[in-house]
Image (cartoon, rainbow over all chains, first blue to last red; front, side, top):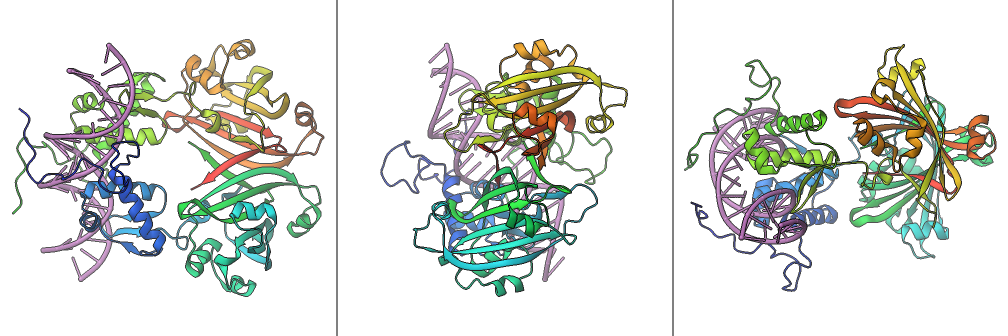
Length: 262
Length: 262
DNA sequence: TAGTGGTCTAGACCACGTG
DNA sequence: ACGTGGTCTAGACCACTAT
């Protein structure tokens, strides 16, 4: 009673690409994962840049010699990871930090009540120096490698709320000066993406409560010893390569850090 | 050039179930979303209890008169939301708080270094009383409705690290006493699930840094004014109904709150 | 060996955006 | 009218688990 396949054999047992040796299943990976890796490569190579459209599902299916459904599943996962954005009727686009509502994805600070979300950034300093051992370790730099240190204060409604201390690998951010930072409008990550070709895709944060030390307290306009939220972030690009270490101090009297567990 | 459908018509234009009126697309919802809602109903009704297996994809497909692929997509989403757990070769199971690694899903506290994750709970009190207005509002209770208040201290390696103040709707947790709490082994949410049939599926937290007030400081063994992480959580069951309001104070000197942005 | 979820395919049709 | 993603179907085969 079972009907035979229409014709045109699937040609392989399912695992042609990748996995050099002829082993059966020890290093098995589904086709759509391999396609996902190929697309990720294209993103990493800059073949498709942030904001641009990528080829349609049917075209990719043709290019990789798989069915549209397989490409679809690959793109589904990349969209779930916020690397791509699907727009029905238009196409699939490379996600970007510029026009997104990243306000809530990477700065999870919300006002207690009618407070505003618009904020402006005041640069405290931006200089190049050897990274301290701990920072170098987290950025996977050699001890002598140069680094960039940015310090800035974020103010909401003219009140300083966040002090950030940002460490970047110097080699990746050549030509980053305080003037250039000051002249750029919009989120820092958008600038990193458009000006330096580095796209943050993931971050991991360690959150603590600490007492404000004198220099920090002064910049934030609070008393020494005032309780602050300490946020240590490491951000990663493609391939889980760390490209930013950020230490933040938040004044959480009228704003709070929002997190959803699910 | 287009070949006709094999036979056996799909019978409808795509939207038979739900949406009472004959309107075309104003309230359109995909089939798999409707299936998802039906399965969620089964979970809510207790038709399949936590830890139990649900019917196989083919059986559900038959029951709902849709293809296996449609059921699969519905289950995919429920699994992504941690309501179901798929186990290849065995079946699909209702997620549970008992044997899960929920240690990391609902208590995101990690040690700085070799510290331990095992902790024990010391109950401070458990009593029934009118909920304060603010708590009642968050739990969507009427002002006169009774509530349960639990206070407890979590200790890691014999050091008190977390003080929790937990508010529950009294009607939903009849018979919850301090003795019963004390005699239960394992996570609180596991107890709520097995003893009271209430399963937490989602929570939202507001995080701040605060100065320890005297009573809190005493229970945690720190000085008054010591910076503590304040975590205000509202937990929800099926249908986004709030069923728990929890206020936690964390000592974050050797432990930190871990959060991943992606 | 049988049953379950997991992958892959091919094709039809719908909904959306644009010319 | 056309192309894009979105939904739905049907069937084949693979991988894992149990018996």
